[in-house]
Image (tube, rainbow, N blue to C red; front, top):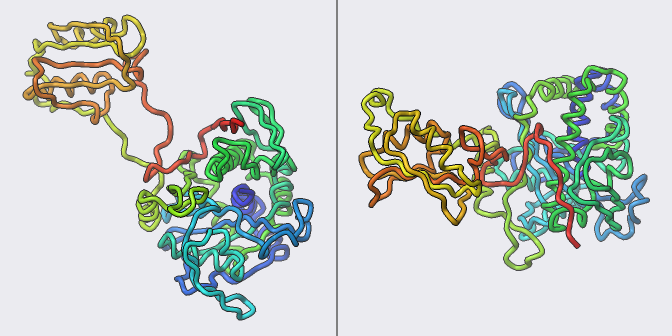
Length: 461
């Protein structure tokens, strides 16, 4: 969770402070091997393909993190509490950030630690256990095996990075629909918008009992909203062009991060920072890998069939934003002048707004249709639909284009004597159907883009 904001903070700092920040990074951070398994290494350069960076949040309680629990309480050292795979497209126009729940059951490949110890391969194991098998390089190997994507770099961050970074930027605005008081994480927020920093920022990102259904996927959704808000603030306040702020971010992040040896290269870091600063917020997509309850334990998760579509999109350097827009069908322009507009058109109101079909009937008449009737329906419909008999496709498409009805809602139907338009709840006002403003993600995955402001649902006890 805390890894998310560190991901952005670390990369944008290099843009703002240039070579100095890169030198600071070199002197502050720890490094480890990129890959401890037999899965392929990445090593992509920004000019010859997408760049894949795995950001890992460690739940270690050792050192400066001892206030969040004793290291002796951990069964086997630090685990990767949250993982996000960030992919920057080859053309530098899109960024995907894919989250993996820590309760996800996967196969972990054989890994060899820096001390020479060999960790045998494991099947059906929680993904966060991979960090204990020699370090972040084994988590990289696990993600490579799972996704078919070759990770180029990793960043491992801890609790203190979140606290310090959120304070350096002056707090991050978050929203919850109801008050939250989570005794487990310490999160204490009123309903509505709040600026959180330090301990409360960390509590917001750690809270599992505060959001949605209390699951890890609900927490990830809150984390994505937090990171999107942070990115909007960093861009809107000119942080990227303020050397003083960049210096503070560099100090906050680099003292609490471990990266692979190749990611301390100044040229790489400066390039990544510049690229990220130029990506439109609407082109930065946060998504959670599609999952379903684990077959043998309903409290854990396994990949669903839809995850394959997500992984294939990443492998092909595509955007996780689903671009399949349900556009309105267009009538053949060569035939519009000869359209028979004497066909009966029945307008049925299922919008829940009295008189809506009657109002829209006049619009149809203005198009030249002379046989228009309307009626009120007792039942409501979510969507506006158009049905037509064989031979009247052009008329149906003309009406669909006029009202903005999606092509999937225009259907040829046997037994009709004319065109039937059912006005749904998506068309209670205006001249065209209201489009769904929520971001569609490949594979039906949950997520959002960085430009979207979201308000998190509080957990109902």
